[in-house]
Length: 223
Image (cartoon, rainbow, N blue to C red):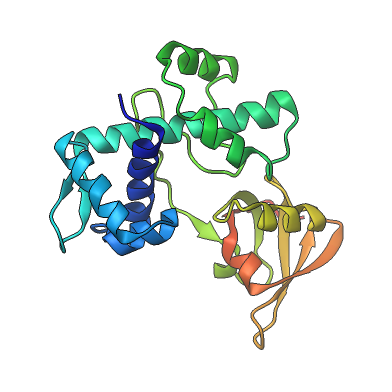
């Protein structure tokens, strides 16, 4: 059985590799986890001995098939617990990450199976991130950001790429949530801000940074 810390390493390696598309350096892993590079090196040796990773000094680290499967299991549990906390316990989407970080280490397969069934087999978490299936398949649909669209486009918010409480609180203050309908009214070339109509009602000005972190789908039903 892996420790909580070992599982956190495996999940972090998965997420960095997913973003970068290549081997994960010791320094990038240390930076993500907020620890010293020497400490990371020691842990990588242990995970390599347990066959969860492929690791050679100065060449970066990749997950083995065994490690990749474990990472997907952890992510699946994390996102199911986030959905449970929001749907059934009335947590805000900005409150669930840290709690799910603790719950994701529960090892009972039966509990996670029943949790999935209880939630009616959700495919995305409260932030719009895909939930791996029981067979550890991850939905790889294309991702579009609001920043990539232009004036007169109509979009539906389907996720966020930043699930920090700071960002989610900002979206709450703007009344933007999953399912929100956005019509782009203007794109400001000076600062790349966007003037949008939200849910066919309010007019809202959002910054470039917000637009770069809002995941959307084009909506052809213009109103």
